[in-house]
Picture 1: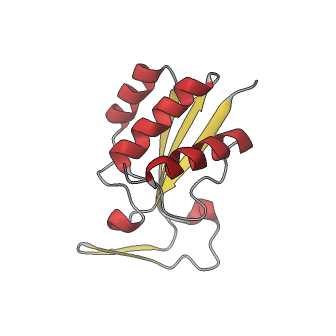
Picture 2: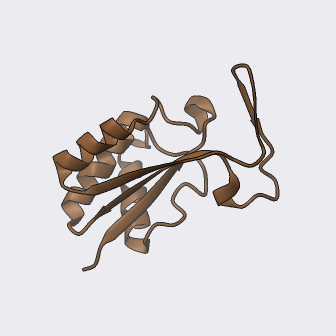
Picture 3: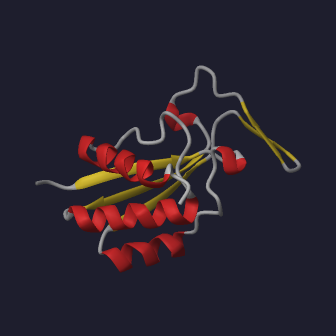
Length: 125
């Protein structure tokens, strides 16, 4: 079997679509080391992002997924057990991504496994 990869995307809209706590590279590095997987972090600033004090606004209509503000975490592994454990740790810490596009860019096997893991605890651990 080849590499399993999932791209998890959180939007910066608080606990509804965003992560439960801020996503930090150091935390991701710890999870990657613990489970023997590769994890990368990409912070995307949307082209239509407007921040007014503590309020975040963004017109996302007619925008591609890559043009929307988001935190994208990519997990990849050759061994399914390690992949599952790392994704479980991400869900436990940050909760589930809550958008329909949350897994775009993942391998089919990665999407299937992530969806299965989210069903275990409805994504809220």
